[in-house]
Amino acid sequence: MWTKCWNASKNCRLVASQHIADAACSVLLTRDPVTKARNARQIAEAWRLGNISHTDLSDTHPPDRPSRPAKPELLPPGQMPRRRLGSVHGRQALLHAIAHIELNAIDLAFDMLARFNGDIPVRDRHEFVSDWISVGDDEARHFMMIQNRLLEMDSHYSALPAHDGLWEAAEATSDDVLARLAIAPLVLEARGLDVTPGMIRNLTSVADHASASLLQTIYDEEIGHVAIGAKWLKKLATAKGKDPAECFRHYVSERFKGTLKEPFNHDARELAGLERHFYTNIIH
Ligand SMILES: [Fe+2]
Ligand SMILES: [Fe+2]
Image (cartoon, rainbow, N blue to C red; front, side):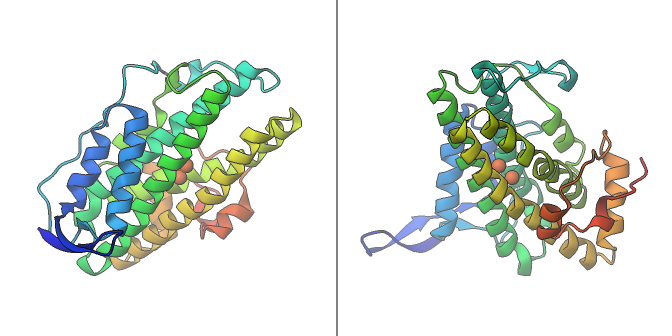
């Protein structure tokens, strides 16, 4: 497909436009994390410039697992080393774990686009792509913020082991957009809202204000990601004649391996449109 595009010098020219599924797959298939983050940000910019199409359907299928480098080694969640933030090694380990979450979050946002854009009614698809591409753009920026902070602290992403829990959750929800929305943004990202304020306090208490400030930025923006997840779960469940809260509770019971851990950050969840009756008293 060809579209008209205005470039920075205001010259009108024709450029080839890529389908969103193909563009999203190119992120998933990028192995090097920094290149993946840069690719994600370039695709978000191409979308904003109108150079990516979304209306027709695509035959592209996303990979079961995104491409990843040989390192970090992936360990079961229970075998991850404990972190003590008083030492630089403890803070490197915390930031490394966050970088790994952000890298997974890039892939989760672009997998949402590659895997599920065709399930969205055409009238809603532009909004769906805009929302999830903005999430993917944020996640790529978050990854680079943390990677750069690790470099300042004489470390880097892949220097330590990481765990594979996030992509296991993605694989458990690869057949159903409602299941994916329930588990990825509304369980896993919402959990980030619960635990990040405590990490910011702990980093501040050991005077690592630079890392605390990055986590504050991430926290503020993650409220928006949970809000996008809540909006689409409500919209798509309602369109199918389902009650959104019951739909969420059904998928958490059926697809989420763990239990929802308290204490919850009710204020941040409420701000994101994830009301208490969605997530309290779920029976596993
Ligand atoms: Fe993030
Ligand atoms: Fe996020």
